[in-house]
Amino acid sequence: MSGYTRQEVAQQAGVDPDYVDRLVELGILTPDAGDAFSPGDVLRARWVQSFEGAGVPLEGMAAAVRDGALSFSYLDATAFDRFAGLTDTTFHQLSARTGIPLELLMVVREAFGLAEPGPEDTVHRNELSVVPVIELQLAKGFHPVVIERWLRVCGDSLRRINETETAWWHSEVMTPLLASGMTEGEMLAAQADLGSQMAPLREQALLAIYYGQQEHSWNRETVEQVEGALERAGLYRRLRRPPAMCFLDITGYTRLTEERGDAAAADLATRLATLVRRTSQEHDGTPVKWLGDGVMFYFRAPAAAVLAALEMVAVVGRQGLPPAHVGVHAGPVVFQEGDYFGRTVNLAARIAEYARPGEVLVSQEVVDAAEGGPVAFTEIGPVELKGVPGTLRLHTARRLA
Image (cartoon, rainbow, N blue to C red):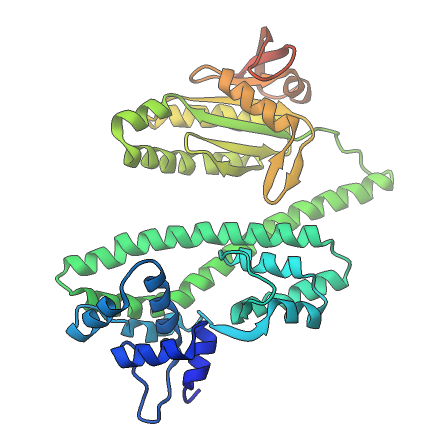
């Protein structure tokens, strides 16, 4: 593109044309000889307005730019080309044109990590890229609530990825550049150049990981379909086993945080995640979410959950971490928005709370489903758990020699 007009910069940046004129007067935006602006100027106008809205004085930013203490030139790097501006289409107009319910389109904005828009707010160009798949999903009979859940899971997962990337970008790129003697402006330009080199490689890596996870998930679903077809044809009889939920907690995590600080607690959580993730996956388990002092897992088979739990407790102990304790319960669960819910989940969490350091404690349902495996169970008797009516028969698990 040869360049944007002042009106186009204002429209895509979501600011008034007078604001663009003001930024030109202050020297924050500099059009070329033909009074044309660059894509970077769109970002500069949008970001500077955001800074001003956060309390950073506009005149102060302009003075810093004039003095060379601050530069926004790094926004011209190709790494920022993917940050598209606003369109001239409102959410109401897009809903009328596509037939997509307005409420569903607003969830798209939520997935992008922004506040819920109003019907007359304009749509971002990147948000338009999500519209075709939603149109196809609705045309094929998808329930809007299912699409909403998918959008929210995508948004939440990618938010976590980007927050992690931002943290290591600060520690591994920006801080070392400043430590090397660069000025703030030089550092911003240098990190933008590196970002332009790394951005397509990160996207390539993310897609590769996505495809690998997709293959694993699709393969598991296909196995279920094949087993079902063979069973209906009388050629196969699969075992009916409920899934199992497993909670692994670290003993004394709160005390460790108080004694050694948040950094030590975060390091412990990172080491724990590295240790237990591989073990759970080797037993066809899925880490569902990380809870600071522990992890919640889903296992297709209770017997596998017990074996994984015993191995995880052992490996945590061998690595010199505070002892872990685990609770496992088997039963029906509800899957929604990347998470599991229901009584089975709640009971597994309560059992984990009751377990002692270094102990794997399971319910009677797990024992019944895991019979015949290389594990021995010892009943500890009917137990009353906090917030659970009645008593539960609980058992300690240990690996047979």
